[in-house]
Image 1 (cartoon, rainbow, N blue to C red):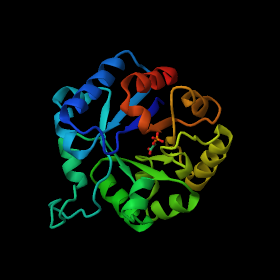
Image 2 (cartoon, protein in one colour):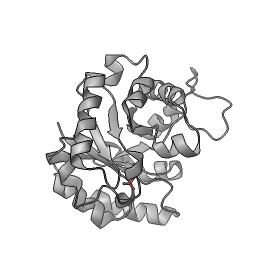
Image 3 (cartoon, rainbow, N blue to C red):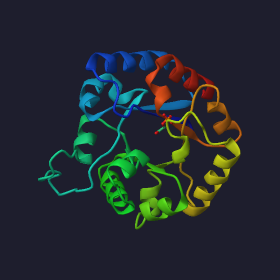
Image 4 (tube, protein in one colour):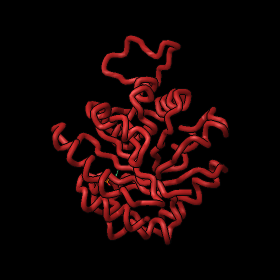
Length: 234
Ligand code: PGA
């Protein structure tokens, strides 16, 4: 199995030109990477521009940072401001981040909403990256999702104290949580670590704490730093 590194650009960068530059630097920088699948998750507005026919099939894959839960047969509906998983799949997204702690905190996203979003994403052949910080969020988020669905998912352990703070979780504590998640889901799917990952600490989460990948926020906006992380893991 390849390691998985997901870049969460959050609400950055502010212009299309910067987004293209960042994307192209990463794309060129990972040409010789063999053991890592890289997924870039830009804001919605940049998705189709970055998803030209070439990037559709190659490394890096593209993901979205959220998608809506309603999944009517037509895929559409009266939900102002929302983006459906069907639209994302249609433009070529492979992955979607669901339940990020920033959405739980600033937009009051509940476990119930997260659960509905996961189900809708899976129905549309998107691979959800479920972000959690405790086992209760794992259990509630995955309620009613059967093993076949779970097999197409990724879980990211992201302790809130470590997100964007420059204070990463210790590999020992993170490993305990990884084991707890694994025994709660009882399925072999990639479990990622996220929270203040940089090129200095990235290797510890793979080597010491045995995660199958990383979810990288801040450091993914600096192409040199992000490429160092990918190269270290490769
Ligand atoms: P960070 O963000 O790497 O900037 O801590 C991680 C995340 O929120 O996914």
